[in-house]
Length: 278
Image (cartoon, rainbow, N blue to C red; front, side):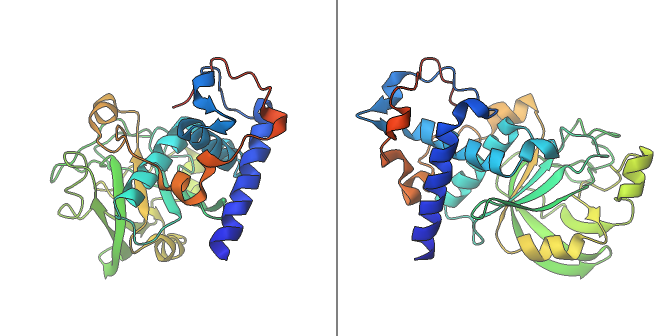
């Protein structure tokens, strides 16, 4: 019953965003009429409408997270879901290292409920850069942040207090994070006072350290098998990532059957010439 109610709610949100498509941030200028067959929308169009409905309803633009990064994060989440890698579904954590360390660049999302659960500061490795992280590594003793999709694992109490291990899902980019002891932990060098004073917070050994006052709540929420994405517009990663470049059927399309839902009458005359789809 809960799945049915949720599916109905998402479909309502979806079609609301479709009717108001000209009021959103989306650019659908390259979709051709080939993607609409017998009044039905294709998976690619449906995916983008789903992404836009979530992005706009959660007002993610206000957090500094771009729509394109959110799309990439959702694609990785859906890919890991399709591969049965996620024990805890519906949660997506994004560390957006394209933003300054003085910004709240870590965001935890509940995709099922369409809610922002946490939005706070996060450190990068001290050898990854100063205020901005610019270089990344998968190597031991690099003291750099690793890029890509990971899955949250078990917790423990160590030198940095309550911490959570991560398992990397991308060979060559983050498959060594567990061996490197790259974990989420709390730290006093990550806080709003340092951010306000303009002091960089990239002082970890590569760990996504968060404010000490928030670490327990965040870890307890995302531990045990949820999706964790460390992002930066690195050309090598973007080109080589098998997850980013994967071709697969998004589970959300299958579970909600959005692609088979008829386009409402209000959209039948919508000009679809040139709508752009990721």
